[in-house]
Length: 394
Image 1 (cartoon, rainbow, N blue to C red):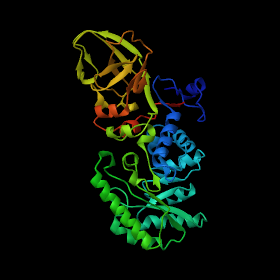
Image 2 (cartoon, rainbow, N blue to C red):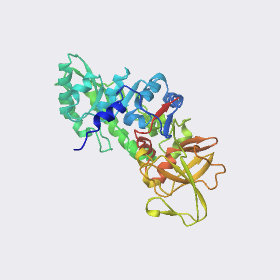
Image 3 (cartoon, rainbow, N blue to C red):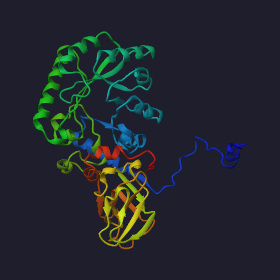
Image 4 (cartoon, helix red, strand yellow):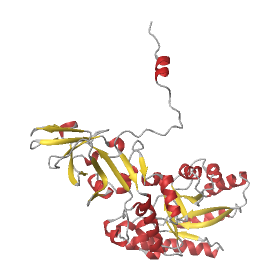
């Protein structure tokens, strides 16, 4: 008869407490410079001036940097608001003790209003049913007043009431006296591309909606349009509040905008060499043999792969830093590993630091460079760094 082994295993290896800190053994990590985050927030404040508030966007785990530590750094540096995409992200910040106003930028989906009100989050709203849901939650919570922001779709095509739908929205708002129209917002579709005509058209539609609200006696105290690109390049869009995202993490949303601000990249994505081998010319490397050595070569194995956020698309394209030298990524990126050709890196050894994103000495590789190799944008690279990669803060 088969003997059950579970009791013996349990006795030999007790189940760890859920309160224990997670292990950090694998030599792959992300380091986040909280000072750089604070610097970038202060740079945004400098650019918009004291009359304009800054909402720091910390959605998607603060673009992979860690929502709670980043939010604390931004608030400490003067952010008046925080911005998240979904209610759960706002609730995480509240549970961590953050008390700054938090705007849920994507609005409400499904039955989220009760949780939104419980955590005192400010919603973007753009449909009458959203107003009704928030009003019900406000009544259930015993609150008298609750602020909401109207999102207007002036040309993005994603979220928001079209300008011609705003009148019906305002009619619906009158049925909910507990709701205060605290803000009016829109979002630019082409700010990072320097399309001034498109931005002017969107701004004209926004201004027309603002005028229609004023004609009804509604004067939202916060008008906000500007994302990182328009904050940097179009001061006429700053209004009462700006919503920078990418620039707060030290990356300009377009190459042409880099010169407009002193931004400090806050994230370093690093690993270490765990194996080295000497191989002859004609040696196939990794899955599919998409790379074959053309000379006797020294290959370094790294414990980082696409499960960690190194896109498979950068195979045979990207470079990494070893001993302050660029080394090419060769062969296909695997789930948990990849390979570098370090033939030209004198003294490369097991245990050497390898930087995927960040700086070694005078040499740097940015998230935008890795994004170019992956045919994507730096946002996706940052957000794609996996949860199993520990974040450490300094």
